[in-house]
Image (cartoon, rainbow, N blue to C red; front, side, top):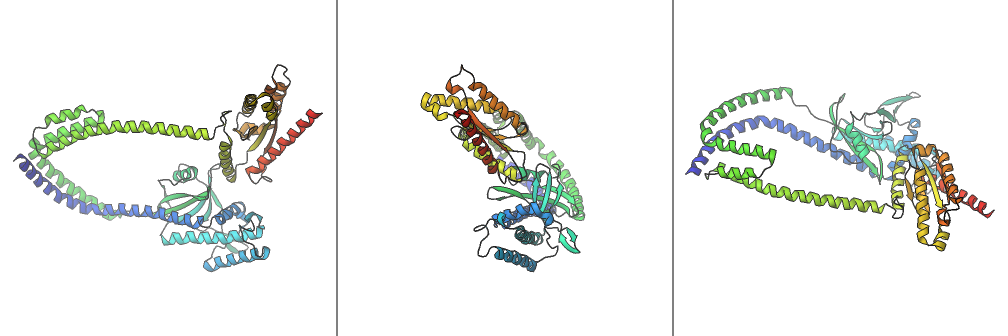
Length: 518
């Protein structure tokens, strides 16, 4: 009877509460639609960014060629301010005619590299591609009713952003004709463009948005890094309008909600006055237990709750279930802690294995694998404008003679001795062992600035060892060194610097051999 009586009374209360809730829900539906619209627009942003990414990446190397030439020569390019499908085809035909005349029967990217094209053909190609890409961006902007779409090329060193593809055209006048203002570059602070810089520096799609309130209205900006192969080239930016809630409807809804809330409060006060003595007491006990458990996480709370469960009504059942949940949660947390500890151990092992893969077992410095990874990173930085870089190549002399005469353990001692000297000399630069007797130091900072003095000091220390009569043959470390510093006029890549340093080293090695023969 107690179960039935309690259920009947709660049914009456919830019936009345349901009527009021339905009334309030109808008034709140408008707000729910606003939230739904916002979610749909956010999803639309991601879809558009993915679509534009597909447009650019589908061209593969073509887009990378366009960007490389555009960044260096945008000031000399004249893209018509007004163009459509016909003008894009005309620009394409102009480029194809120039290419076919200069290289009949050849295919770009197969028979001839883009960098080998004359500047006139490169310019025609870049103008055609710019019109094509910009047209795709503008179509997406209109089709999806967006505020803004752009392709950006950030510069982390200067904090500036170049608008390479801009759906909002700016004009310039050249000889009385209207052209698009290209390569507009402006500073973007980290505070105002946090998500934009996060997308660029991390190289992954961020989960958040940048919010702007400008001439377009209130917009949310989403950014997606663009990769061609493994090379990160820029950011695709999409800005979308977030429709404002109708103030009149919102104010009316708030007024009605306040009125209904007042009625609901009066009703609930009257209702709670009736049922407090019979029902609320247990709920208060349960609430206090929940509060205490959230602070202390003590399982003794469950034991206390179970002592108060004297009846078999619905509230007592809830209390018993909550006590049971505490016991289960305690068991789950213990299991979770153990799982986390196991995961940390696994992660530590993975990290140790990764370090071993790039670590030279003999010297403790990074090996050829680590060197190759560092070279890829430097090549990316050079493509972004890095110029303060150099390479020092060091080669150990007489390693084979030491191994054959005194044994490989003595040869290892000679390698370790040279490694220590190189690391001490180039203390501001990463040092790698890339072969049995070869070391490379990638020059940075003070080492790059004082390379001449460091090379002299290196040779002086080796000569001091060689002139020491108390040292064994394998302890008289002998090595040749050569270095090269990046020259933007001759070095197209890191490999050019390395080859010049290697050639300089062998030149010095040959000179050392001539001295020994004399």
